[in-house]
Image 1 (cartoon, rainbow, N blue to C red):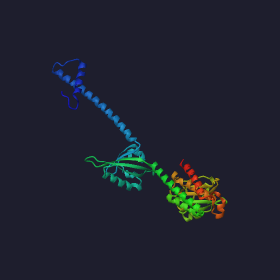
Image 2 (cartoon, rainbow, N blue to C red):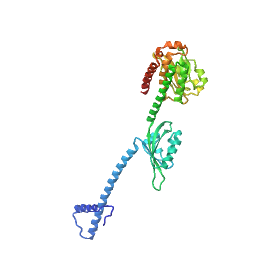
Image 3 (tube, one colour):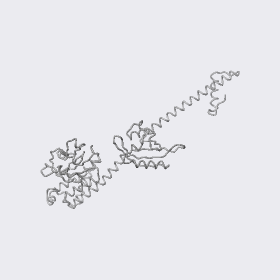
Image 4 (spheres, one colour):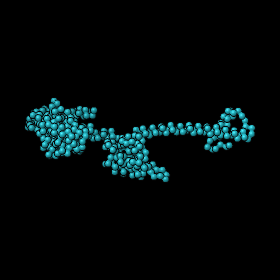
Amino acid sequence: MKHTDKYPASSQQEAEEKLLRATRLSPANSAEELLHELQVYQIELEMQNEQLRQSQVDLEKSRDRYVDFYDFAPVGYVTLNHVGMIEEANLTCATLLGIERSKLAHRRFASFVAPADRDCWQRHFQSVLEQDNKLSCELVFQHDSGVRFYANLDCMRLQKEGMKPAVRVVLTDITERKLAEQILRNYTNELALHNLILELISQDVPLSAILDKLTRQIEALHPEIHCMIMLLDKDAIRLRLGAAPSLPDAYKCNIDGLEISGVECTCGEAVRRCTRINMEDLLQNGCKLAQLGNLRSCWTQPILSGEKHVLGTITYYRQPTGLPSAMQTWPSWRSSVNMRDRFHSRSMNSSYTRQRRANSHFTSTPCANRKKLILRVKYMTIWAAR
């Protein structure tokens, strides 16, 4: 019996030698030769089967290592077909998208992209299908629960002969980097706002004009909020409206002059407790005035003097319910630092001459004023970052 080209001759020779050592017999006739040949072939097959089993074990180990690297990689891997449907994804990708991996197959990848970025994704996907090189983009993704995150996508087309193209995508979560960039932009904008307020102070601009400018600038930096500043009157019983440029007139008329003991707004509670007050849902908490401005949530920060006396409050309103993020509460601390010494030096109910005498903080040079306030701004910035 002849061996095939698939298995080397040494294998058959090794089998023959093993059989001879086991039997110590020499074939004497044709029947014995045939039996000997069959026994050699059987042993050869057993050896080849053992080699195949070992190869299978090695392949399974290699596959397991690949699965571990693929599924538990720090980035998401996903394969899309030519129309953008998900064909395969690793566990990291499923975790990032907020869905079980078994439910990802045959779903359109664009459905996980935030609605505002879906047109951008479609254009990017078509560009990937038309080019051979890797293309990248940054998109906002949104879970079914509404949670959002930023991601960087590295995409490359896969083209096999006789088959429609596919696209491999590497999904990297860059939310922390984006938030850091946003904080840096806010910090830069807030510093510009500080400089503007300091300039107005040095020019002896009336307090009402400074408050109006401050609230308008804050709303320009954060379009999703409405800003309001209230001033505590001299008898420390009522709050007077300082500025609220974007709130409806009906709301401003009703809130001006409210007693701090009332429950119609968070300003009075912030004054009484001398701490920031967050209100997730104004209507559920009995604030009927909120209906006048279609306002659902707010947070109020008391403005304190150098002696820790409450001078007023700064409030941020939003239309959706919920608590503010750390990034949204940041301006309230910085703005209160901007204004507290201004309140301490100038009162809405006093003359300009009395304002100049009441507080020596602003009787020094503009450079000294700037230095004192900037030091306080830096301190509050460090506090807010913790």
